Image (cartoon, rainbow, N blue to C red; front, side, top):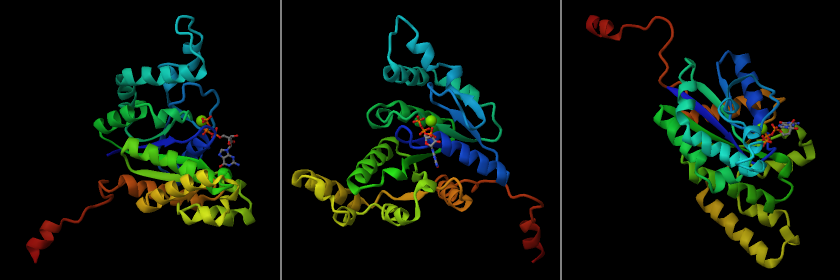
Length: 272
Ligand SMILES: Nc1nc2c(ncn2[C@@H]2O[C@H](COP(=O)(O)OP(=O)(O)OP(=O)(O)O)[C@@H](O)[C@H]2O)c(=O)[nH]1
Ligand SMILES: [Mg+2]
C-alpha cells in the first residue's frame, strides 16, 4: 500500500515545520518518508524536498507573467488549478518512489480548503493511484487564547474534514511555546466541547454573537467529531503519538509482509 499525509491548515500554523519534524522523527526510527512541497510560493525549506510543485509551476512564473497579471493570492489559486489540470505530472513523479509514504506540505491559503475543489480533486486522484490519504489539519496552540477563536478554528477544521472525506487527524502545533500555567488552559481544547464557552467567560461577546457561538459549539459537541492532539517538536513522545494516530487512521503497515521466515502452518496442520 501507499500512504499520504496531506498536511493542511491556516497560514503560519506550522505545516512546513511539522513536515521537517516528521521527516526527522522518521529518519531516527528508520522509516522512509518523502516530503512533497505543494506550495508554489515556498522558497526556503527546513526538510529534504523529494518532490516540488515548483518544477511544474511556481508563483513567480505566474505573477511575473504580464498576460496573466495575477497578484500573490490569485496567482496561488492559478497554480493549484494548473496542478489539477496536469495531474499526470504528479502521477509520473510519484511513480519513481518504491517507498511510498509521502508527506505533502500544502499552502496555507484557507480558501483552498473552504470553497475551492482543488484539494478534493488532488485527494481523489491520489486515491485512484492507490494511496491511502490522511488529512492532518494543523492549528497553532497559541491561538487558543479564547474559546470563540478556538471554535472558529474548529469550524475550519470541520469544513476541511467534510469536504475532503478522508481520515482526518487534528493537531495543535507549537506546544513548546505554551508555558506551563497556560498549557493547562490549552488542554481544555484537546476535546472540543461546548462547555468551553461558558468556562472562559466569552463575556466580551455581544449576546447575539455569544448565542451564535453557543449554537455552533453545540453542533460540534453533538457530532463529537473534533478533537486535537498536541505536538511539541521537542518531545518525541508527542510526535510518536501523532504518528500512531495517523498510522491507525490509514491502517499503516496492516498489509506489510511479515519479516523473516514464515512458519508453514499447512505443514504443521498436516502433521497434526
Ligand atoms: N517554537 C515553535 N515554532 C514553530 C513551530 N512550528 C512552526 N513554528 C514557527 O512558526 C512560523 C511558521 O511556521 P511554518 O512551518 O513556516 O508554517 P506554515 O504553516 O508552513 O506557513 P505557511 O506555509 O506560510 O502557511 C515559523 O517562524 C516557524 O519557525 C513549533 O512547533 N514550535
Ligand atoms: Mg509552509
